Length: 356
Image 1 (cartoon, rainbow, N blue to C red):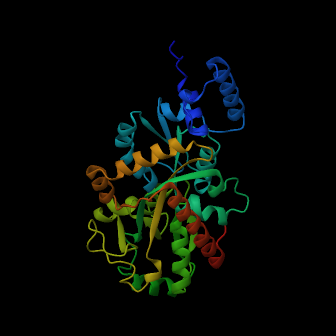
Image 2 (image 1 turned 45 degrees about the vertical axis):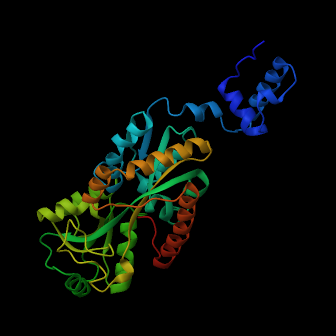
């Protein structure tokens, strides 16, 4: 007499939990299956992973929440990853832009989503590491409410001014700003953005003073506003400013990368200008809600790494000024986020920055 075939979820449960196969049992099959099925029901109510879900994943489109408007660094990166990432997993990747409150609205929406692998969150240095220190009443703790999958990219910034601003170097800019303190504005993609913190540190290092003008929706709207003359200066992610600099609609004074960027070879680094402490970019990290089964996290990790390693994807990202940076594992991604949270918490405290 042949043994009845177990459901895939039950078989996975027995083999992974008890390290046994049906052949190891001499008990009648019906009581065994009934008892194990009852255990599965109890464990599922306790929030343990659904093995069949992990095995079948993905079987429908996957959503990626980007907490900023189209045109910013996060949006550009997400859309470059979109097609190839979906191809590798066999399901479409749908981008949803959910801007507002310096990225907090989209982050909260993602954190509250079902932990089933069908909602991804493309967070960045601002949402994941700066906002928790800047906003005392923030509802999301990224280290508690998300599983970090992997780092994705690091995007250097550019120090830019309007095309008509009467300075062409960082030294000239500092001298000019010191002569008229508090007269000029600086834009940012939001109160908790890395670009805002870079400008706060710039003012501290140079003894200058500017008025902060935060933009809703991210770096894209901030850069467009500066092109229109609404503000005079800002640090902005290179992917959002590069084409404006090339076309002459914004003036690039420096980039915050360790070396000059191939797409802007005539723009010096901030270190060359004498401000090495301002070197650094705006990283992005892929995350999923806490409770997502580990098998699904592993599948997402592998798909993300494989997508980022594709030559055509790397080329597109590099043309936008983004540098591919990945984590060795989800655990390494979490450690990175933990370290960055501590680091930027100190910066927020030292600069005295508050939400605007």
